[in-house]
Amino acid sequence: MNIQWTDDLAIGISVIDEQHKTLISRAASFSRAVESGNKKQMEDTVNYLIAYAVQHFGAEELIMIRNRYDRFKEHRDEHSWFIKKVFDVHAKLTGGEGISRPDAEEFRDMLLNWMLDHIAVKDKHIAETLNSFGGPLR
Image (tube, rainbow, N blue to C red; front, side, top):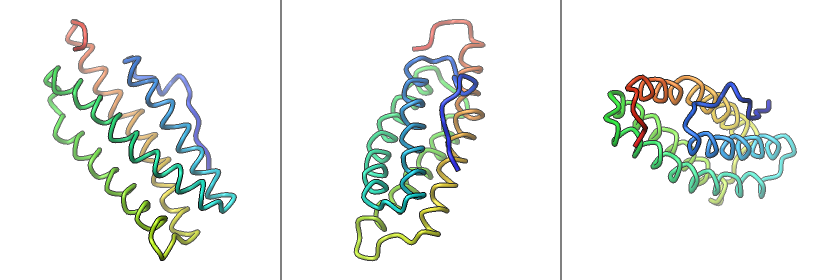
């Protein structure tokens, strides 16, 4: 299973689109690491995802707050859920128990499916809603 950026994932907010491109690239890296069984690459990618997701979600949430996005709370809950899932995998990868291949594959599938749905549906809705106001995004 693989993922790559395509222009149909663009939401039209350039700073967010650039961050999404990077997140998708890192998710693809995790997918390749799972396929090859490279636990070091899995750990490196998950470490990156934790830091970058927090930064990216913060930027998205700031845009939503400044523009009084009516689904902010639900959207933020999805971000929190995602960060918790990534944290759990990080704990397994860096803890003594490690991560099994089935667990790594399950996380990979969740990661790829969640990112595609979140970007293509939820984040696009933010952009469509905010752009319908007619003014510049703040």
